[in-house]
Length: 182
Length: 182
DNA sequence: ATTTATAAAGAACAGTTGTTCAATAAAGGA
DNA sequence: TCCTTTATTGAACAACTGTTCTTTATAAAT
Image (cartoon, rainbow over all chains, first blue to last red; front, side, top):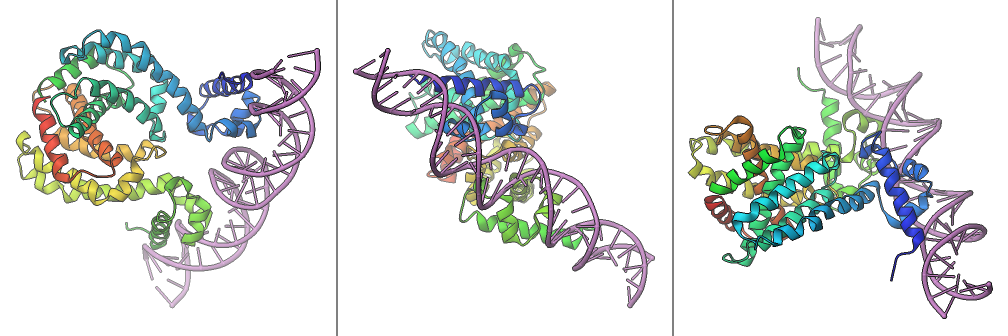
């Protein structure tokens, strides 16, 4: 069951129109009308696929996070989930964020909805949950995963707020330091 | 220089109208028109003080977080900032969130803007920053504060997602456990 | 290649948004 | 108390939103 080519075409048009408009103005100032005009898509058609600009961006951002979900998945599995080997895994997270820094500035904007945040959170949390599980009670390890995942995002928030002035290596070294003794 | 009574009156009316409407529908479905109608405030007047429903809620939520900022401030200072005494301080955070659970469900909603999140984040981060500072480089301790503050919020996210099924004591015990060895 | 299914366009609707303006009302200062 | 200042109102505006409907176009299935 493959997708109707017409749907593929319109969603692609909408997506690239969004990227184009993002070069000139912030996400929250892009109206659906304007977007459809630049995408040459009828406004009613937009609502057939998305319910808001945020929803459209969310779909696009989900594609970005696939870079984290899949491209970085294999190398981690090679490390046998040992806690000592969390390091290279986390380097990849910071590297990924830097690679798409333009979009992470949008994701962590005060006016951005939490939906993007949760997309990132869920991925990191799932990674960490795989390397926990053993000794703790189930709900405790779920809380630990959320604790650790969000801690890392805390560093990313700080990083974005400082406009990426630190290097990926510095971020990684700090993370190693922080997880060591607290 | 005290505030104009008319301003106090209208903002109070808008705020209580918002609380009233929140009993019947989610935040994102409340329109400015509807709000102004129930508050008996002219729509143009709304824009004199706020720029959106989110902005109004943000102001209200800021009042809620004062419960965390001030009411819980003194007891913490009495403990001399010792790391061992972070415990009672953190109990207060979870207690505060439970006390205003109705609003924290709104704050952590997928469609809610990050502005509320940052309000909470900044408070917890400021608390933690006070108890760090000593041995680390300045930027490192800022990153550590963000790391730890957001870790705690990670637990809150998990807690809200589970509709507060764990007790404040359980949350606190887990936090003690997590900060001990990682 | 023709038929069938359905996506997209186009047009229309009431309601919302953000803004501006002159007129009015109400608060604060002397 | 009177005067001055300024917050609020009410009305109007174009633009945007969310939705529905019919018609047209285009992909998929046979």
